[in-house]
Amino acid sequence: MIAGSSPAAPARFGAALKRAKDKEVNMIKGIRKYVTEVNTELKKVSWSTREDLMASTIVVLVSVALLAIFIGAADFVIARVIALILR
Image 1 (cartoon, helix red, strand yellow):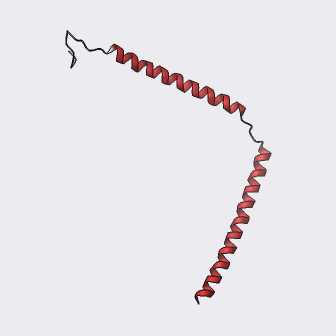
Image 2 (tube, one colour):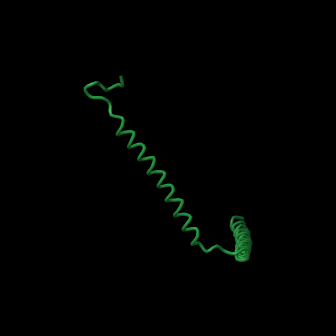
Image 3 (tube, one colour):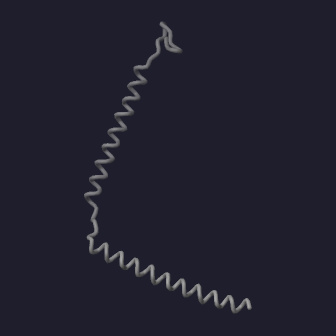
């Protein structure tokens, strides 16, 4: 006999099992819907060409290099000025 059940009031697992199965089916349907929608949206994306990507990468690398040089020079100058002031 299952705890909490008696011949007068048998345990009712049928409804609980059905709810669990319905949740599982709904989750699978949700995952399928999500994957389908993602696939649809990815078809709408305008992907860059290799040439565009290479040009953008070069622009970013040159910008980073120039900014690094500027910050390094500014740091050097400020350090020298502070060193002169603190002498």
